[in-house]
Image 1 (cartoon, protein in one colour):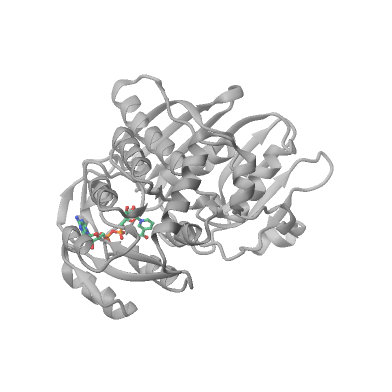
Image 2 (cartoon, helix red, strand yellow):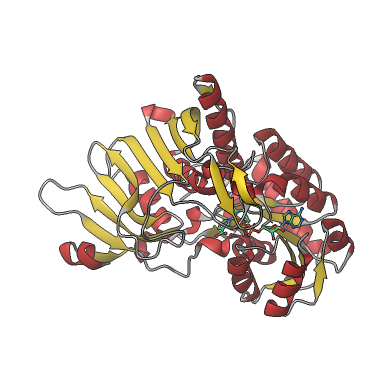
Amino acid sequence: MGDAATANKLITFKNFYMKDAISRQEFLKTTALASAAMLVSSLESWAISTPQKKLRVGLIGCGSVSGRYLPHLTSSPLIEVVSLCDIKYDRAQSRGKEFNIASTYPHIDKMLAGVPFDMMVTTTDMQVHGELNKKALLAGKHVWSEKPMANTYAEGKALLDLAKSKGLRIWGAPAVVNSPQFAFMSKTIQEGKLGRIASAHGQYGHTGPTWSAFFYEKGGGSMPDLGVYNMATLTGLLGPATSVMAMTSIVNPERTVDDKGKIKVEAEDNAHILMGHSRGVISHVMCGFNYFDPHGHEAKGQQLHSIQIYGDYGNMRLIGYDWETNGVYLDNSWTEPAKLYQADSEGYVWQEGATKVGESLVKHIEPRIAVEHALHVLEIIEAARTSSATGKKINLKSTFKWPMV
Ligand SMILES: NC(=O)c1ccc[n+]([C@@H]2O[C@H](COP(=O)([O-])OP(=O)(O)OC[C@H]3O[C@@H](n4cnc5c(N)ncnc54)[C@H](O)[C@@H]3O)[C@@H](O)[C@H]2O)c1
């Protein structure tokens, strides 16, 4: 941690870290909500209908991120990746060879009719997530979807309703709430160590993906690709947003990308989003595809903070990015310097979401990641687009179970 570590006391916060899942029994004990009971019963129905010990996974979309997902999924003793699909079929074949997965398909219909599996992992272009996730649910598969899980909040909510009606589960990225730093920050806030919370800020940007056009096409943009992480972190820490105001813009109207050459940028590549939470708390996210960052897309070794939370008795700054964190500064003393709390990573990596929810199905436990949270973030993104287009504050209707830790 360089300067930061030498200037301040390094503390591990394993003690603050609550395990990212509670047992099924505790889960039932701690909530009488009908929706929670439904979640458990769908976990049970999977257990009843699935005799094998491993969860069989089919992954669709064999591009860049599949290269991070597949090593993680295939390293789990509770998961077997049985099939791969990509409309650019050579990509499915090549990942099949790389990870020793025999069944590969050029179309979702063929994959769903092919070797049986239990959960689909969706890592395609963002714009087709909703339609592919719906097909998987209709075919009786659980779903883990890269963000966003659908193009609109209404489409996403319909997916959740469909999943519930069929006793299936659907979840959406990101997995930031799984990090021990998130757990530490949440617990610090809940224990009142920052006093009364007032304001928070998150930021994430780089100079934009170079490989695929969909990031810049309608339905893409820096909010669903990058801002989504900060939105998930800030709402996860501060509670659901009740309203949104935003300004978005296109700074760079033309790009050259690997799959389509020179393209016109249609989705925002620059966004500022204000979120109102309960108790008067206001937070802000800025994200964009025109941010110079010498740490690049991988963000290796980032020493600056990307999330900050202010209360009237203390503040916290998360070092690095919320999806790949390097520690948290806690400053809540007039006399002592800020302390750096360095997490034991406990094995957390940003690409673990599909593996963790898959394992939760096998172990019959409820994961910390909640689909209602992903849906809430989707509603924020949609509201930010509307607010920027109309100049109005947009009230939100969605919510999720909070606090998460
Ligand atoms: N690349 C990363 O580092 C990264 C990190 C986190 C999240 N993500 C998310 O992962 C998703 C994919 O991003 P990527 O960078 O891997 O994109 P990519 O362009 O590299 O890969 C997407 C793949 O999906 C395939 N595809 C598109 N439509 C399809 C369909 N209908 N059926 C089957 N295959 C289809 C494409 O042919 C392509 O191979 C996006 O939602 C992105 O936001 C990416």
